[in-house]
View 1 (spheres, rainbow, N blue to C red):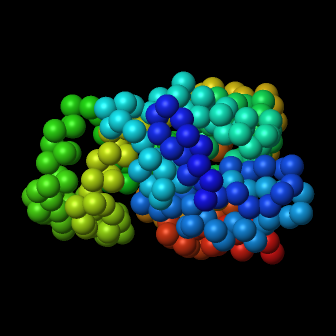
View 2: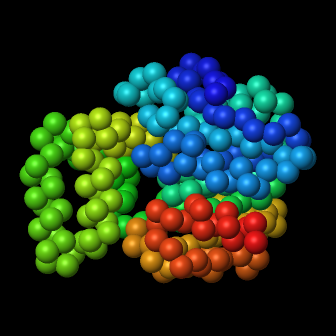
Length: 263
């Protein structure tokens, strides 16, 4: 692993390849860079992949939970990474939460990004429970209580599932991502530190059109958290976008997308 040390913390990433064509690859919530390893299959002699651990994931460390990660800080972090690794243009590949980071990165560096591959990206429009890290600040104290006293929260989720207000797949996702105190703490800290880091879609759409940036959007046909319908308003505004729907759910989209690209 390599590490970029900044005043806000330490960004961990794995570098593969020695080529000049650099791609930044960012995983989803609750994952690490290792979950994006299937993309190694796309590595060519002229390419270099930087698999990034998001803060509060893998080996990346955020110094102060009272300091939010905003766009100005993220821009300085990516600029520092570009300087450290000696590249000036790059591609972006992001899955789920990593898709949101990719969109924000594109917003900040539209002339530097050569292409975008987004897999069920967060930050456009997602299901309620999947967007835990987007809850507003006034829920800070109640959300914090969930970390230490989760049973009432799970009872509410189960009740909503029983009356049909929440899909069973979303309930399963919540249970899995919050089943231990450490996982609940990860949700809470992720929400608190960069829950407010949201892409400004009108700016991104305008720049993609202007730069004619190649963009591919992968959607899981059975994905209940990031659906094709929710992404349609975004994708319909970019004429040259390539939208690919694959017969999988949210959790199988990484492998399915890589298989689609390599075949």
